[in-house]
Amino acid sequence: MKKYIGDKKFYLMVLSVAVPIMIQNGITNFVSLLDNIMVGQIGTEQMSGVAIVNQLILVFNLCIFGGVSGAGIFTAQYYGCKDQKGIRDTFRMKLFIVLFITVAGLSVFAFSGRQLISLYLHETGNQSSLDITMHYAQRYMRIMMVELAPFAVIQVYSGTLRETGETMLPMKAGIAAVFINLILNYILIFGKFGMPAMGVEGAAIATTVSRFAELAIVAGWTHRNTVKNPFIKGAYRSFRIPGGLIVKVLITGLPLMINEALWSSGQAALMQCYSVRGLSVVAAFNISSTISNVFNVVFIALGNAVGIIIGQLLGAGKMEEAKDTVWKLMFFSVGGCAAMGAVLSVLAPLFPMIYNTAEDIRSLASRFIIVSSLCMPLYAFVNVAYFALRSGGKTLITFFFDSVFVWAANIPLAYILSRYTGMPIISLYFFCQFIDIIKCIIGYVLLKKGIWMNTIIKETVT
Image (tube, rainbow, N blue to C red; front, top):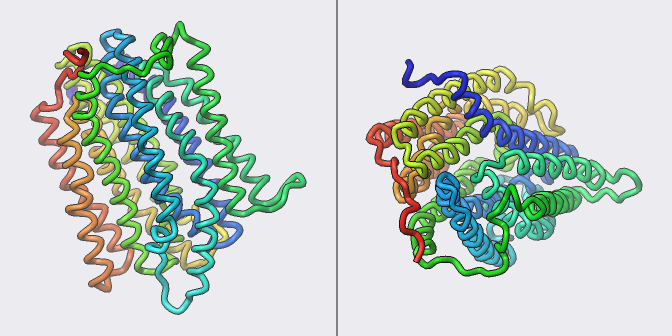
């Protein structure tokens, strides 16, 4: 067991990285839950429309995440060897990447938004509900498109700060933003303090304003504290990036960006398969995923911690320490998520009662939550394996391990079961999630072989 359990110093080090991320994500997801409940109070169609658009925006968000993470692998290793110029160059690279993705995302939503939303609208004998859901989804999407640009730039700053050891400021900025979002949601959705009741449009405006506030906090602090963040000095004076670094970031990061795009679009495709069973499934799945996300912060934060800690160890050439740390982090993450899953399973019937929706939707949502809680240890194992492989630059392997698996296994299974069988939706969902046990086996083998233990920052300049 010594291989899997660290000492007090080890856990303090891990928690110093993971807890700020956990708190930020936890508060963000909790406020998203409150947002979801607020929108749910004004109608099931409104809640479903918002859920569909948010699923589509998640694809954009994860493309941004994948784009900056590719360069972020280099940032963490540059920080490990104290190369500020290298950090500055990767910061610039991230800016170019998010600009390209944002323009592409805005184009897709502007010209194909209605068609994408319509993929999720299936019902028998209730066309009016579908039309109402489409109406609210389009109104919500039009305003949410404004928040794409500040979200993208936030990821450039926050990601770079985390990779250079500053995890507290992004956490504080995130907390401030979600509380701004929450307060504005209450005012704008329901029309408080003399404001008109704007419904889903109010929710979109609140989110957009909170994004700009978060960007102002993160970017403002970074530029005011150049002693702590020397990489930002002259970051905008020139946009020259060494050719060798561009090539290496693209070779390493492009599979990662494509992976995030395919994985997130795969999740959207899975939701579309579930939506074939009716609008009530969309509503119930929205409730379930929003609540589950509050509990998923444990493995998400520990995954980010793996990327940062292991990346720094590899950058410093500490291969054996990196290998030992991975297994300890794996055990910690899986054990923590098993405990969180048990709590979530017990509380599953209570959470949907908060929503102002039909009883059959509440019942369906609670069963979705139970399935998610059972699979949390699997998610944790897969997440640690993914970030460990990625920290060593093995992004082509993570591409097959993550998104290719979704499109080759999860989606075909969901498509066949949803369209060609009468299997109950909960059983269908269970099989589509539990198939990740195969990924756990693959991840264990890859980690055991140690193929991820690489230093990738050598000879990146020309």
